[in-house]
Amino acid sequence: MNRNLSQTGIAAGICALACAYSSGASAAESLADTQPATPAFLAAGGADAHPVQIEAVDDDVLAHQTGKYAGNDMISGMVLNVLSQWQLPNGATAAAQGTLTVEQSTSNQLSASVQTSAKVTDPVPGGTTRRNSGATPDTSVSGGQNVAVNGVSQVTQVAGNSNIGMNSATIDYNNSATQQLTGANSPSASASNANGTITAGIAFGNNGINVTLQTPAGRATQNIMPSNTAQAGSIAQLLQIAGNNQQVANQLQLSLQTQQLTAQMIRQTGVLQALRNIR
Image (cartoon, rainbow, N blue to C red; front, side):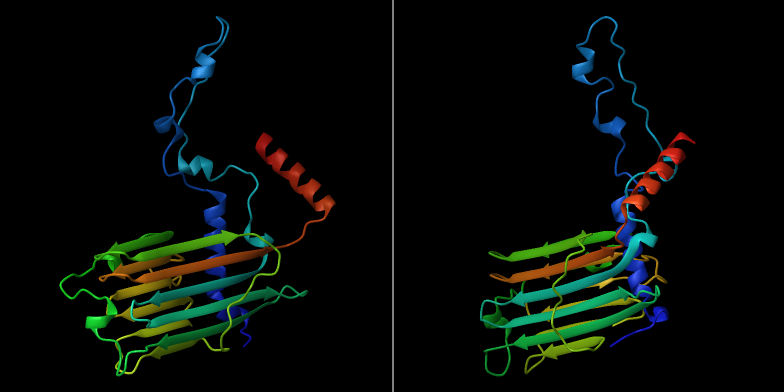
């Protein structure tokens, strides 16, 4: 289904987050804290050699530096794929996935479409129970859902043995065709087993995304926060496993489509950046 520009605030938020991530506007730690004042290969020079002085630079200074990065005006579209999967040792599975596609027309108008799907399979008659699901009722995992991070957070909490868990988030600028996940043209989807012990759900709405898998052995979630929250534009992936022999994965892939620049536009951009640096 197509949506107009006012309904694609989530796309703008995701693109802004990706651009901020790629431009490296803030540094985790200063170079002065991780490198010696004089590099060894320079300190061993002759009598006329002058040691290199390293000076820490604040983030507000770095934020005004120019270089090669993807600005908002360069992004012409995007494809966001999210997928969460859980496999229990008794053969039961849960999966929720969705794709958000934003395209720009020749008249610079944006259109968005969403596909979602959720599926639960349970070979145990009457629904999976704790006894055969690998869950360990004497253990618990909690607290990870309360972690607050502006940016991308990946939290894994495990209480059990022989588990496989993965949180994966990738952002790329590959203009080649991106494989989209298959699903219905709906902003949400949900599924559960017979007695509701395993559920899978995904929802696009309120400029955010929420994916949740719930099993007797724990839960897996992926959230992209809307712009009106304290964690505006953030991505959070969480795995909480209280069991044995569980296989769980959260995957998020954001592919940004960039405008193709002509040779003349590349030269003009290079000259402009050089003039800014001189200034």
